[in-house]
Image (cartoon, rainbow, N blue to C red; front, side):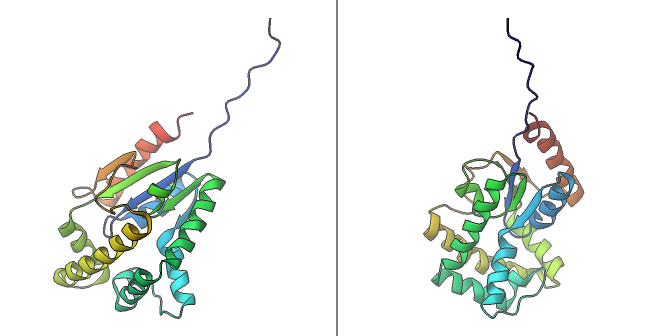
Length: 200
């Protein structure tokens, strides 16, 4: 007869990754989810902005990636992948610590573990959201997004050989946000996290 007392179940550290193209609301949502579940939140985009600032770029707030400065930095990243490699190395290090949320385009493919979420929306819907956010016309947003996303996809195809926005193999959950507002998207993800990720 065993005299060992039952051991309490130790919760496995949470590693969440939220990804999605511009205009899906992933950055705002990531911060909100991280706050609710008491996770450290790290953004690949923010880390790249810091490197851009160090390289002498005039970095502003939201919508910077769609600005002329952001697009120029994007062209530099196409020529020199060192910026992206440095950021991805940092994010992988943060993931090892556990209890983190990573707002990233690359981590779903580079991370072996973790729960990976893709936010989906049609190109027109995303362009409309970016136009409203950055106070530009729909046509301007449409053109800028086309250019930005073509170059971004080229960077990751060259670096890691995956097709951003087309390859969904790494993801555990895909949510179409076309007909959902930000609060509804948050509510759906909380249900998923509560019932799948946080279950011991």
